Every structure is written in structure tokens, then in C-alpha cells.
Image (cartoon, rainbow, N blue to C red; front, side, top):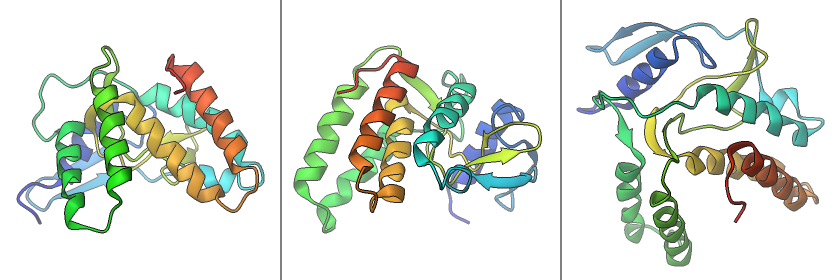
Length: 192
């Protein structure tokens, strides 16, 4: 166990959802840094459910994201912010990560950070591996991190993973353009 562990942030996020749009937290053992969550049955992820037609996975993802979005908690104990995460990204200079990509990422992040009314308690790893079918919901989320930041982050994580899932598809750019439009319309965002 680390001095600060994200499992407590995950537990807090799931506790606030109380089984609505996400798996239910059944128990937490802070000393052991462990949580017990409900079993997701039948447990088919979006990428499995829509492998024959990946474009159709976007609307269920939007529906799930709408159902789990919530304002930042009043008590920020165990909750990280996207600002903290992005500060960690500044270590890219110690890696082989492209300086051009880093500059672009920081510019986008700065632009998003000044937009009013777009800060939420985010799922943080929102993509088709962590959105599942279940008996009580058509689709719901598992394994959140629970950080506070701009809504665009959760959407970008989904779109990035959609790209990697479909990167061999010759129509991947059209798929992404359509998905960007769908998310922008659903959350009243600028597509650019």
C-alpha cells in the first residue's frame, strides 16, 4: 500500500453514486486499502456488445456519462483533482514523450480549465472497457477513480480509447468525427 492510494477515492466516488449508474460499493477496508463491489452480471463491456458495430456504442456511453455526472463533492478528502493529475504530467520531460504533443495537451488543458460550469466529479477512466451491461441497468460504469475536473477529460478518454480500439478500421476518422459531434451535442460543448 502507498501512503496515498486511489482506492479510497474510488470508494468515495462509488459511495456517492450509491448504485446509480455505477456498481455499488458493498464494503471498504481502509486499513487494507481494499473495497468490495457488487458483481456485474452478465458483465459484457461496450467493446464486446458493439464489436460488430462500434459506432453504436457512443450513445450508450453518453447515457451512462449523463447518469454518473455530478457536481464536485463538498468534502474533498480522498479526492484528487485533474489539476493534480496534470501537474504529474509535467514529468514528460524526463521521458521520450513528444514535446509537441505535450505543448498541445497543456494548451487544450489551459483552455478547458477556464471554462465556467464545466467542472464535475468525474469518472476519470471512462471508456468502453469500463462500461458494462448488468441485470438492473442496460449499461453502467465500473472502476472509477473519482477526480474533479473538466467534463471534457472523461469524453476525451472515451474518444481516445475508441480510436485505439478501431485504429485498423479505414473509417476510424469518420467514426471519431461522428462521436465528437454526438458528445458535443449531448453535453452542449464546442466540437473544436
